[in-house]
Image (cartoon, rainbow, N blue to C red; front, side):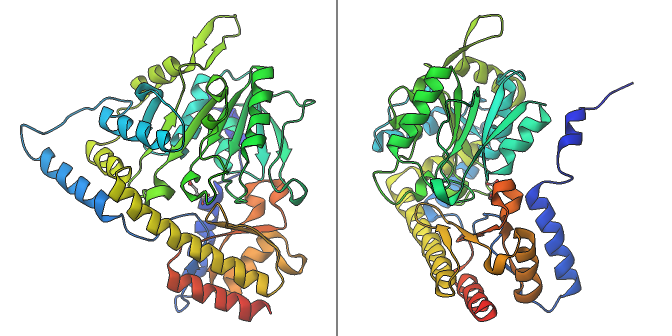
Length: 399
Ligand code: MLT
């Protein structure tokens, strides 16, 4: 008899964003006349920038010509893209080797897949509230999970606690969902904790391109010793609008070495390469050429314009809520506004209120963990027109 993975019994019935999608579908079917404004899942709305489209179009042509056609590519990505990322990191002071970078179909997949190279005996430290993928993928492995609280008192940036022993630590900065961003000094404290405890930090930098201030790190590797204790996961979804195009990268430094339970030293870079070459056949050539163009001068300037557009949306949302006395966080180094639900509503009550009365979709904070209860997330990724309309509906509806 085939037994199934019983850890799945410990998961919530469905993934947060699938849950929300079902609720919105049901509302839409019952109210076909309503114009629903979706500011829930962090999905971009601006098209890919011209530099990316041109690069992909050229790559499509190459694929149609015998001499330039490509079959299987390197599982860890093409060198041209590694080199572009090496240069990008150098622009904010981080030196990487090309083979420390692994191209993937996005940070979500890598967040889940990276669990393969860690023992199930590890204790996992996860912030609450948090991007639910960290939690769910570790529940699937049956690992012991401990939480650290993100709350207004610590600006939603939990710091290490010497009384809590953890082996693998998830950090996300700028943070999804709260928009909070760690300073270099705070990351230094995390690196010191990881070094002292032989732990590994899994650092999700998916929103690094939204950092507005040069003093806020865009990579954990600006911190000394971070290469000895951290893996960084990043994505072009939010940097360059690749949510549907799919391309991300994970940096696993050569200096990162940890032991097996039996005491054997293992280089995590080699383990990840072994994992990827076995289970993954790489990102399509056409997409990687598009990704390379993101890091060109022209491509990055075009992407920066889109980022500025989303950040202006976030500013408008924050301004609207603050006008009616609702407390807001985030929206400075991140496209997310994290707000206190008005009138003492719970997260899901506010979700229902916005959907049923104003036809606006957001994400209930409780979906990101217990500490998210009473909070709500809205994104700046909508169109300007829809964002302004949503803010107007909210200000009118809640005043
Ligand atoms: C979110 O809304 O939290 C993100 O879009 C989800 C993701 O990046 O997978």
